Image 1 (cartoon, rainbow, N blue to C red):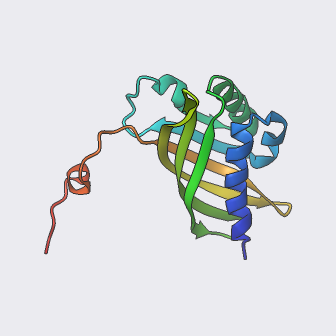
Image 2 (cartoon, rainbow, N blue to C red):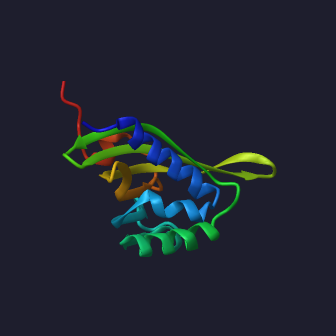
Image 3 (tube, helix red, strand yellow):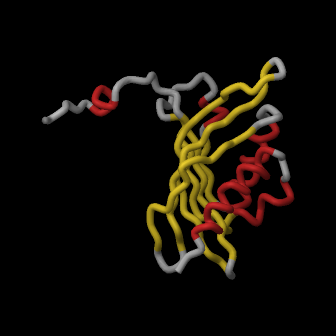
Length: 155
């Protein structure tokens, strides 16, 4: 049986140490063979080159994360919400959540991004680490769900 709270804590701790640039604490959050991707839902954001990543292995993930964080504003606040477990195996727990990111502008909080995070946490030697993290930021023009998916209502 998995410790679901520990999986929630892993995600929440990651966002905190990422935002604060606590580089020394990052390594312990990731499995050696981690796969980490980021992109926008539209794929054509003006900063897509800065946003998009597809890295495998702890060393490559940490290198990209460090470069990305150093090029991002401070303060930066990633707020994970609606975190929930989507599946379990003997050693892994799949999860999903929303993400809401803020910074400051003119001394006031300012919305920066939102999106969906999906991932897998793996228990290694009693500690949960990210085996996969996939971040997709919202950039598409909002429309009704029916329009987005080409659906019609059936009564």
